[in-house]
Image (tube, rainbow, N blue to C red):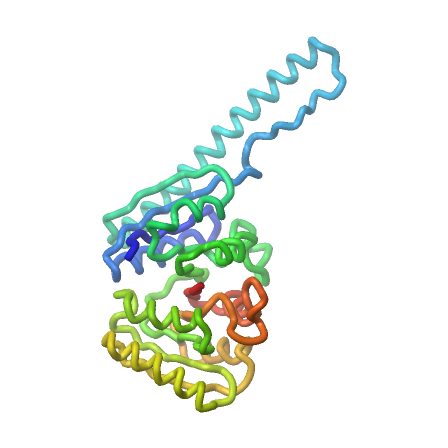
Length: 284
């Protein structure tokens, strides 16, 4: 199994939580943490010619001044990125993790994920980015892009970290749900945690069989999981269950098995990530 925990930090209010979640995973799995900050293309120095039709001498001086400003801006952006990584490293170090590396990257965040995820166990990202305080009802602009592109599990960190003792697994019988069960069975992250498999809908022989098979697979791995069928719509019932019973984490497929199959991220997944105050582990 690939061993790194890749944590994406951007200086937002979610970055500290991302670090704590990454450290928690590292301690339970004995895996190293790589902290990555990506300087996006929008942060690159401006290249537009702002000199217009100014005469040659003045134009030359203005171009020199603009070039100097661009160079200074690029320097400051790089310094800020390194400062974000230093702060993140200190948080993970204080949580007791010894294997920590940092990486400052330039370019698109999805392209970065494609390059580094081959060595990853899991990718940890905040629910929202630097505009989190101004977009409380919305997900971060990069979140869906990362989930859509990543081939590794993606843990969407909640705003605040709390130690996890119980896990709700949203099980719809689809391929990603079965992959989630297999991941739980194989990963030391879930050892000793209380796991509950939940299907929302009407109980049928097929649903009962799917839950029984999933429970048996987990039992073979030493995890005594509970199973439950809850009537209603998954978009609402799963969130209510998490809130009412205090689950510390949700594990679910990023793609639906039913009417939401055609969406990039199913409506159930989007609603869970948006509304839950606990981390959500998404499986492709």
